[in-house]
Image (tube, rainbow, N blue to C red; front, side, top):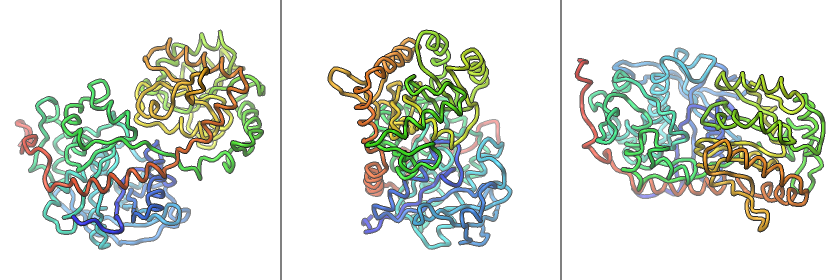
Length: 506
């Protein structure tokens, strides 16, 4: 296909900041398109319009009155409204009260239908708007059906004849696994399951992420290290044989952060503003955080912050083993913000009661408080078992909080262990996933904190680093061009496909 002067990209995501968010995917979807727009890409974002999205607040306008959408052998109705990101990037929201007029985004019994309908409505809506994308950029399992469709039901559609797909894996652990009925809902039951000789269960389930990997023209993950890790059984979540087969089309592009949103010089939520050249405000932010957390307001005691889901994936099985002996044997404060597994809620409630002047746990989600923790903490803890990219460490560094991480995925790509003798490194990291390795890294960070000149140089290094989307956006533009050049009209290996339902079904 001849490359056009203006690249047209349809960016599909289940959640987008500032409209709807549960995790890092929303941050990416709200920031990357703005950076692409600055590079001259005609990028348009697609998402569902969930119930809590206020049309007045976001100045939603109707661009398409209800139109027909093929679904499960029948026709349903969808409307299309529009908002903008950064005053420039159009955001198309699929409207359907039955599927989206709910308080939450996920965890509904009909999630497969909801996101299939969203994707089909966007593809049909673009045809009615007459805007044919060069590339459809799909994200996580919720939009993985699109590469599948463009190689099957839309294969002969002239509107999408030249359209390529890129599929971004934000977290391989969440694959969207359903039963055969989903193929009927999506209108692809005649093509059947995917079969892979080294993945025995793949022919018994509809693995949406597996389909995105199989059918997309190009696949990428959100860090270079994670792109390599997922090719191994340890990190591949049972899809590593399929990923290895497509490794020549798998790339890693590190996520960025929005420097306009995450800026200690302008952040509206923090107690005082500061920057690389004037850090007085950070001390005020630390005192304010200590006060809000009910901790002694001591500017000299090191304060470690953590903002996370309280799960094993995020390393809380390690934190649970070391938090008590750490508090007993080291001089520091710890502020935690997050929700997750009940056993960790109970653990930190107990730890907080035991050490009320050292530990404060906010077992909730609070966006303003998160910004206060980034600004008020001296160190930021992320000991993840695996971490595709991680945004917390990038935001923390922007605010001068030094990361303590396990060297995996995007954490390995962004945090290098400090070597005090040479000055190399920008944080504290450990390789082996063990409580002792985590304990040692925290102790090293606390020891280095005692040396004010060393610590100030470390803060200057992390605050001056550029983790904005500009460099990563240029890499995505390159991937879009590669996807167009590598586009194929059919799936990569037809031998993987089998037709028909399971033997026991009719």
